[in-house]
Length: 393
Image (tube, rainbow, N blue to C red; front, side, top):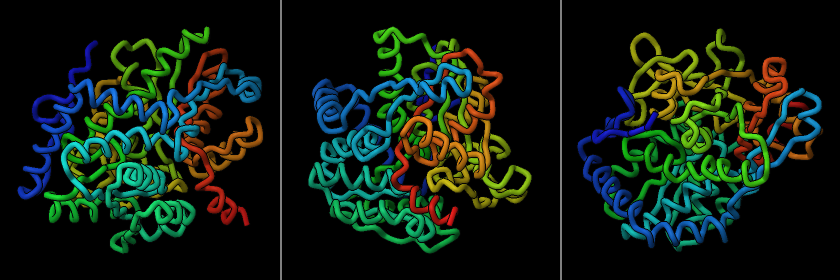
């Protein structure tokens, strides 16, 4: 199967598209043209590849979780995106889009962030390239991610608190979109996931698919059995899309995306857009989202700031409907248990996002027994330690 997506209208089947204000359409067309030209330019790729290798630290290693493998009865491996510069996969996207902003002659960059990792990665790329940077962040997320706020400020970025709505990622995206509408001539918006209007989901996927492409080369080169199951957390969905996309076409690997089950799907306090959501338009894209009977966006909930989003990337919606990926969810409590389990058995403190993926593996260990499983360890958990400590205080 060949994945010829998105189409000329920026759609993945019935999902995606450009649901944006008329004033923003020229900027989206300009961005699509600029990225299409850059992505076909060998010099752009050479500069990006050089930075990924020397600045980001790619390729990230594949690590066998020996003690967890013995405990769970599965052959468990981690793709170590937590070892990339700034501590997460987000830097793959921001370095690429930073290069694109320079190429487009845009001196100012804006971004949104929830868990803070995309904000830190954007601030890092802007410091590298000498670009002005402002990051929108919900006031609730500012409280629970204080360390990343300070890191952004150290890197010369202005962090703008968002007090509207629930003060979380959804609201930060909305404010960043409003800023971009009024500043498109000088500003590039580095969106943090495979969400938003076309061409953003496509751009971010192309910049993140290096994760899966590396894995395809590393496992046979190192004599590791080919993965039978690949598991990743899904909020907006960039780390999952990055590792899933290169494998999705052949159908030989079971792909599992794990959403935030929060306090339980029946409670309404969760972030399981693919699990219990329905198709609708959010932040410029048709996708699965959490909404009421009148189409109003429902607030998401997760112990993880990075999964606290009431929508998902449109290509994930397409993958769901085409049965290319299986989407599941785990609760806050299960993720917290997995957070401590990985730390105590492997000496790795994971991001709470990645802990959701491990929690699903723990829950399904009997069904996965004897199989080779790869977990995309999308980020390290330094950012979450203070929050977890407060919850256990």
